[in-house]
Length: 337
Image 1 (cartoon, rainbow, N blue to C red):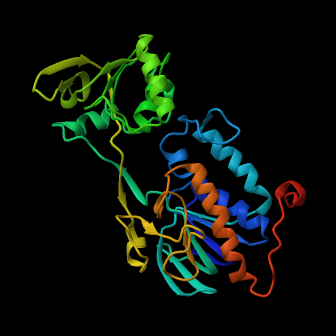
Image 2: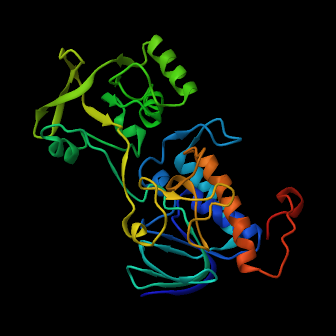
């Protein structure tokens, strides 16, 4: 049954940044509703890698993605924001102060402002161009996300890629996988320097075998059961590594879906915003998190949290045009009971 909701702010995307926006809005006495195409809150943290450790959340030297979502759930609980999950926003009509959003299920959300926190949009993995890949995907011999580390216990694992996901999982699977081979096409990595330093230390300790510079070339096995991964270097020399599971981490392909047709200014599949407020080119619509871009943007969850606060403060005069906002720190203001 379709819902009709009247609110101050509609948040499109219920990942960690969208969830934290509920808190920031609530602290300013702004009502919010969370809308997400997935059937649960948490975005990629819940759907793709709940056990992946995250190292750059202040106050947490390391926290698993699923635990972060659980803590955010507790943080926003006092504000009782309605949730429309399993819903994709198809249309936005109206103007600042009087928007109407319609989902693919026919829900109608009447709102004064909109925050787009849709992460990477509709996301999917960038797949390596390997023959017979689908058969290995079907059996789990090739995986693009790790939901449970224990599923890889005692397995011979090959990890390919040079970004944060590849490096983080190589570190996280130490002591779980029987063997870890790390494949990258060059000796330079895109991951955080401290994580790369930890990977170097793990390699020196014999916990991870570095296979650099090599690229994936072929998969060998029968009926989707992987036996070995064939690699090739820049000179064409080939190498075979015995393996049970291949984890290729080559990033996500982005598809903005209906968002691309809403008239927002786009910059290479991202929504361009004003850095100080996260305002888009359409008055009353803001974008935060991975989907937003501006000069100096860093794709970090903690920066998305900051953007949620900036957008909330920019929205306040839209909802309360005749009320001055006197900022108070949460330490003195407290959280509504």
